Length: 437
Ligand SMILES: Cc1cc2nc3c(=O)[nH]c(=O)nc-3n(C[C@H](O)[C@H](O)[C@H](O)COP(=O)(O)O)c2cc1C
Image (cartoon, rainbow, N blue to C red):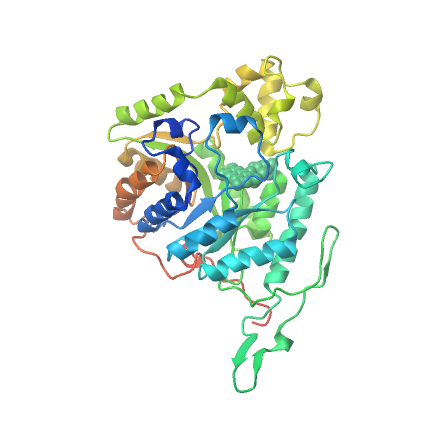
């Protein structure tokens, strides 16, 4: 069997994905507050023909973070619009919340990026897990998990209808007759659902990709259901190859049951990696980062990562019984609660057991070892590629492009140039047919 072509997206973060990265990289960490920092990451990723840059987002932050980490979480769509002007081929995936945005507005903003980038936009659909967000948007309560996902399904449905309101060939542009668009080929969504009412059309035609590529990262049952229905890329955090095989298999099966081709859904677990020219060097780098890690940051981050407000907890006490008895706010919280019920240790100690990292999958070694690791996961049917979280940036991304990709290319596992000009083409994703076609 020929080797499957792998897909990679690159996460962008100030100095890297390890919390201590900013303290070890030679660059001034304040550079992450300037456009050239992101332009450099984009240029490196594009030189390796990676599928996309991924811009995560949180629309609230717990204040402990300002003490420990460079904070540079700009609005993803605005940042990626700037990068669209500085790049030609790489995909641009921004995160957008279904709980705290209006669907028409989100549809318009992502379709705008799709136009400005010539068809390279993607939307990472999140329901927003942090309880702190409600107060930023003048709401009394953060909706519960099930409620957020129920609304998210309707949200994505209505966004797709807004994107499809203009037929692909609606624009006539006839100077002779003076007709810009054929009104008969424009039909307003007039959507009235349980959660949203959206009447009118976008003030511009259907975007180059028809729909920006849909991305999803929830791993709960409801998250998988949403992904199976709509997602074309899925970011996850499975810790072992066996878990990843089971997750990908289950998702593909659900996609097929929803009437979709499972091959139009790529699963890309988040992989946090540290490279070195020898294994010992890579491990020494990883150890240096870990030695600088703070236990105060870890327990807070562990709670933050699963949607809880760390300031509401006492680090010298176990997680309260009342909380453990209530439904978990996310799939990550379910795993954390299971450990907390078993261990009954103070939070600070729980933070050491649980690590509180953005992914459960970490690697340290040589480029050759990382290429072997990636090939093994791909050959086992565990992944369609990875979302790359270099512990340090920009060097970690450059090392991946310069030293890991050439090995994968020699084995026919990665292309050396982009196919086509849109994000859909290298991903092998069809353009969603418009209403009139
Ligand atoms: C790799 C990865 C990236 C994510 N990026 C974001 C993000 O940028 N913004 C956000 O609000 N949530 C993000 N999430 C969280 C998910 O969208 C989701 O809220 C979380 O996994 C809990 O949902 P679940 O209970 O369905 O798993 C990310 C999750 C993963 C695994």
